[in-house]
Image 1: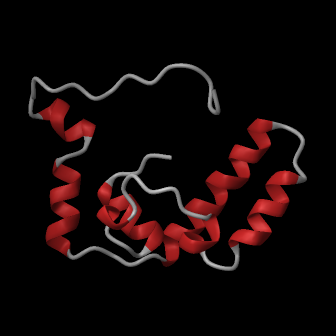
Image 2 (image 1 turned 180 degrees about the horizontal axis):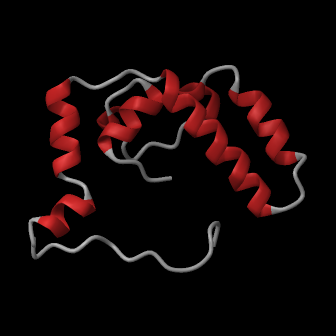
Image 3 (image 1 turned 60 degrees about the vertical axis):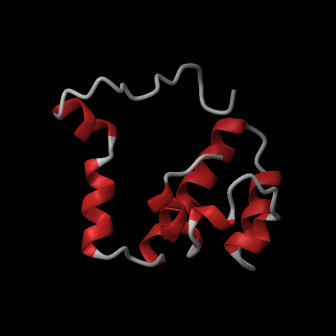
Length: 102
């Protein structure tokens, strides 16, 4: 999975640099509740439903993750694809194609 630096910090409580280019066990970053998520995903027969479970778990975790300082929040918002479009930046956001999970 790929996360923004702010997203990784909010989800995992760690700076993204501590996880970059590493293969880690889900329990090491999500804690003991990851086992329940893994079991539920394994028992789900279709990929769309699995991704829905993962999305729900990650979104729920965002509610409890650490909040950035106001300065970091503003800097992150200014780096978003929408902010780049507003500034007419020559750097365009990536274009994603295909269905989820492919």
